[in-house]
Structures are given as C-alpha cells and as structure tokens.
Length: 81
Image (tube, rainbow, N blue to C red):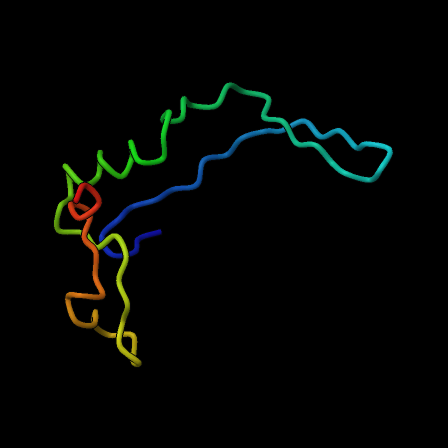
C-alpha cells in the first residue's frame, strides 16, 4: 500500500483469546511487541527532525485539494514552538 510516498505493509501477528464470564474478550499477542516510546511526543520530535516539510495538522479547502491559509496549518517543526 502506498499513500503520499509512504510505503506500508501490514505485519501479521498471532494472539491468544480469552473470553470472560461477562462476555468480554481479551486478546494478547503471543510474541513480544516492539518497545513503544516513553512519550507520544518522542515520535513527534523524531519525525520533526527527519521530515520538517511534512504537515502535522492541516485543513483542506472544500474540494480537499489544497491546504488553507498557513494560519490553519501546523508543520512538524511547529510542535516545539
């Protein structure tokens, strides 16, 4: 799958399922998951340094074609301001 120049492939993983008496189902991965960053902002800082031209949050026009005025757009480096 490719979108906007990014390549992504889903990774397969197995889970064990446990059904509780109340009907809820617990899913647990059978293999160890990769380590997550300590804070969500760690990944924002990571990508801010590596891809400063990418838009973090933006609003498109009615047709969905272009970002509106710069005041409605936040690029990745803006997170540190």
